[in-house]
Length: 196
Image (cartoon, rainbow, N blue to C red):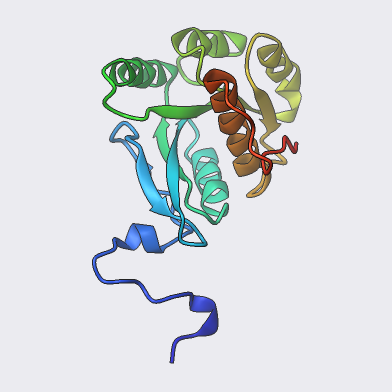
């Protein structure tokens, strides 16, 4: 007898990734878009998130927060340096222009990296990808720098000390949906609400 909380059995031929709603793999493959099966069985587009952060502990916390979202709708690519993030964004722009991949849906950015510091980090990333929404991760004592990034084009910021398995996925989901709405010119779905 199957445990009632285990959900429906996995049909033959499905990948384990599609059957596990809580997995958010970290990939260095460039984040090519994937499809996943949602909680109700509907197909979900996995959104490619680029994390630019030099701290493995913070990267693990971001990964855990996105995995805790429960619907497997995010795929996380992680780089440790601003220069690596800029290369990834340039490659993403090339793939988009060639219509080869869905591309990076959002960037989660720590402003203080080994090769770039403060608002200059944001400016470099924003110039490389002005149409990709950027969510800044900031320490409480650097909140003023995060606010300056928002004034210059970042979609939002979250303090590292308070982001959670709810706030981070919700912020990313809302940013991506609102950005696709504004670029596509379509109507917002009724279930999209900006909740931060």
